[in-house]
Each structure stands twice: as C-alpha cells, then as structure tokens.
Length: 214
Image (cartoon, rainbow, N blue to C red):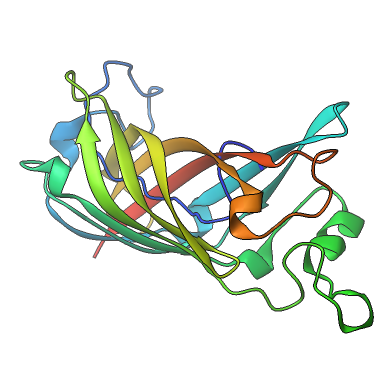
C-alpha cells in the first residue's frame, strides 16, 4: 500500500499547520499560507480525502490501491499547532484497486469458512487517533504520532506531514485546509499476512486530506 496504510489510516492524521514557501498555482482558492488557517473544529472532506497504499508485487513491480470516503475531525489552533488533534475513520470495505479481481480478493470470505486472505467481506473500519504533534524548527513539517487500528489490531504509527494549503471553498464557502502525509507500516503487525514475502510485508502509505471548518 503506497505511502499510507490501510487505515487508516488512516491517517490520516494530518494535523500540523506549518508554513511552506512554495506558492499555489495562480487562480486556485487554496494557498500554502498558514495565516489563512483559523482555529476551530474541521470535518474531513470525504470526497477529497484518501489513503493510498502501495506494496511490492513479486519483486517485479509496485501495486497500489486507495481507501476513500474518509471521515473524522481535526481540531486545530494556529496559535498552538502542537495541540492539534485528529480522529479519522477509514472504511476498509470501500477499498479500490485497478483490478476487479484483486479488489474481490481483498474482500472475499475465507475458503470453507476459514480465515480470509486479507480483510474479508465485512471488515471493520480502520481508525487513526493522534496522540502527539511535533513541528520541526522551521514549522513547515510535522511528525504526527497516533494509534492506528486496522483489522482489529491497534499499533502506534507516526506520520510525516506537510501543510498543503488553506482557503475558502468557492462552492460551499467553507474554510478549508489540506495536508499531505506519508508513513510505512508492516501489514503483518495487523494480522494481514497473506502472500508474504512475495507480496511485501512493508506497506507504504500516502495520505491526502482536506478538512472543512464546521
């Protein structure tokens, strides 16, 4: 799973408000300007938040998929970004891949009532709840540590987070902030062991998240 983790996510957990010098494309409503961020509670924009996972397949190529429809909240105060809190839920049952056959394999029941190879037909949602946010000296990156629950197992995960941009959504007029994050997990830590080592144990997770002020 590419620069992400099932799960949860997710995380998702994209909560620092660092400053970045790069400029947003001309004419877009969002910009990497921390002065645009206001304190409050934000809800994940489920339609524009995703966790991309990537694994190595047989040593021949990398293969990726997506967990979308992420929900949850971010509580943030630009005056104290280290106190930010994120709590997001990733619906594993909605996993998407480029292959209908592989998607079915991820969600199908085990043979003859046995354990499913991956998640099974009714997997519990993944969840990421932050416990600590540490900004770097420049304030443009952060490490967000939290508890990731996936496949019924909870482990501590640390995300490397970048502030992507903030502004007002021109359609719903809501103040919106966005982040990018990445981490790596071992799926065996969460009891997802099928195919190891020909399908890599290491999963790279890449998270892209937008949050709208409530």
